[in-house]
Image (cartoon, rainbow, N blue to C red):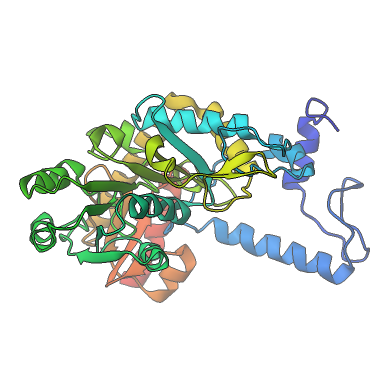
Length: 406
């Protein structure tokens, strides 16, 4: 089947028809088999799983995942064993790939994040954790004796990454909103001015969506005359949003970042976790190794890489365009403001950081946490108003909240 003959009717049949006939060894849609032969018990199990996941996805509001997308036009590509092994900018002997599409995705993000033309390198990752690992790997190779500074609001995976890389690190305290405490940062750096500074900057923390200010961080390093420095930005959720916020924060390459990590399955949306990492090209040269049998250098963490997620990200970017992404940002901000105001009207002390789509409030009842999948830590829960979270859905959540307040 070629892509042009893959009709809209066939797309809908694959995407939306999910009835499995437990009395036969095959499942079908309008008489056409659309999955491998299965025993009746397995087919029934698959149908049950679909129903459970379908219901639960309607209540996923406490984690930053979008679901307002349709990638059914890409289903034919799942028929091929695509692999973007090696460097995305150099063609490999392995040709069943989407490298050219991946390069387009990287060019889009490089432009969005104001990266120097022809001086940035990147690849599509499995998600934010891999992107952050890559940034810290480059930093370690540049400054083997460097001290990594990260705040206590940093994602849990970062400490794991630092342990894997065996890097020296200091945890920095945070302000009430989750942003780095710059006074504490200054005091800790003062104790280590003999070491290069590797600063892990949060551009949207997990629980409160706080953003560390790169300008303040650079000013402190200048003040303490720490010239050997490396700044990595973890912009998993906010990297796509920040360029379109009413007040653009200091967070990207033009603001001093040496590398950045963004998640693709969050604000853009994807059924598969994925992301993008970008870094200054000269830093990547320090870790490059030529691999003869693939005919390309190895410059990534994973080697063999998913070739389908670059295709999804490209499709999403092409479908939305910059104007569409900007519209999504403002819609999400508007809905977050709505949720915050409604919660306050109910007497719940909700709050959010400036230009944030994450609404924070005191920890809620366990039933509410489970039903709406509300992430909770240190006595606080939150609602993330992703673009697919509508005011109608927010009203339904608040109605449940009201029941537990009476």
